[in-house]
Image (spheres, rainbow over the protein chains, first blue to last red):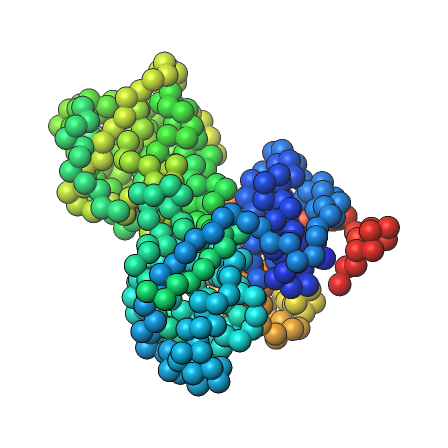
Length: 202
Length: 312
């Protein structure tokens, strides 16, 4: 664990890997150190945003250092089932890249439980990590200028669902009828850090 | 979200005739939603918004209009009391000029026009009762990056004005320092990836001025100056960003993040502008130059040998 400075209003905690990020986030999310107003998990880091009128980074750093984490622990914000029609434009390519074939990709995607590790790129865009690395694929070499909303996709060790139409470089394997981001719903984001996800072939 | 025609239910409203280069609704933003990928947003110059609301007896969190480089023209439907803070610009009510930072009565049907500010970039037009557009995620702020909150104002938009609840403070004018013209000095502290940059980059950052380019908005200001060279060229996995971060893309020209900055970013942050200087940063115009001055921060706690924690 390294503590990296961000001025008076932030503290960036750098960890060895995503598992350590999830374990620390799981410990802090329900009971953050006093004066911490926001937690932003990412692939290798956890950003703690601080209200500088209430505390300072050194004090928050001491609290983080004193936090005992359990290796392998993940936050748990409940289970969501996501129905997927596996008809993505890159399904064949992903089958080739992974050596699993199209059917093997669908089986690997639906057979494991995924956890939303962090959000980024756009509101409600969750980065989901699985239990094994069979579906690890590179991003497309040429990103698409337009990816339809609700596309289900893979990139690196992650899977995700595009919350709205946007440019994107992930490999598209299917689409869902669930809306990952809906401002008329509380909470608006379906896939928030700690939510466990099962994909189900529709 | 488009601004609807629902204003008809409100007793008074503003009708937009011309929005100027960019006018958005802003309040104190959406703190605490970073884990959902939602940024803080809100007024770029927070003290100016708070002051405008105090002058009118509004809660400091009431929504107002952030007017970028003047040019806003609205028509008042219903009598209202307004003020303009931040970048000081002429305020004309039916052609009659009032100074900035004063409390101005606007009769029903009158036109209200903001001229070009003498200095600074962002003026705040507040109305007693607040701009009463619907909240999204607890705020009325327009997040221009995430497309949350009301869209930037367009001709024909109607903005409902809320009902004042607190007593009128009885202040006529607020004497405050106006935004600087000429070179602006902002204090910085080392950022999370300061050790990715060469000593020459750290020296250049605080010894050569950086010009604010026209490629600047509420997300951030692209700066132009001495290239900031990296010592390490590896990819940075995206990580959380803070307002005031100086992020350095491969071009070596830093971007200073403002209110609508992305929640996470994939380029290293060499330094961070101290929170107290951010309101002044938000008032620097394209073409003005920024001189950064490094200040020190108390050290962060080291790894404790007793916990077996390591620093690498």
